[in-house]
Length: 176
Image (tube, rainbow, N blue to C red):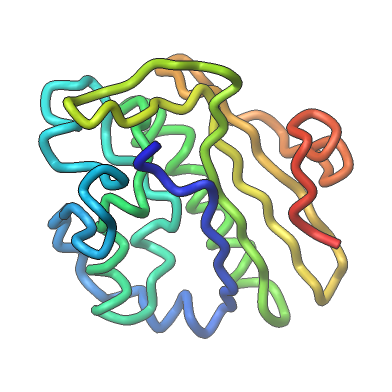
């Protein structure tokens, strides 16, 4: 598979602000802690037409080490470049904007969805997700919502869906 099933982050306004001025270095790297058969390599993405889509975005990281580690390919999934730089980026920014206003910690869970799709990239045959999700839960207000996005250049940011609708559509029970 060579991509995370999901990533979970606990973030708050203080952490987002703490990381605001830490520079990105954009140094992607294969995760040496994973066995070769279970990791993506830089060459898998080269010439694939896909970008390395962060599951835990670099913009959420609040230490230099965390920002650097966010470029591990173990934190990536093949993402359409136009979607990555457009709608998906907007969802990440909107999520950070919400976290800055929240009164406490916010849980953010992000991951790829494959829907039976068998497309791969590279010699390592890294699976290309058909969709991605970002689920946000604010324990302080008990509010939750999710974005589910097709992995496509023409995808647009739509309205988020409720956690209940997310569970019904996707079949994942990540909260409770």
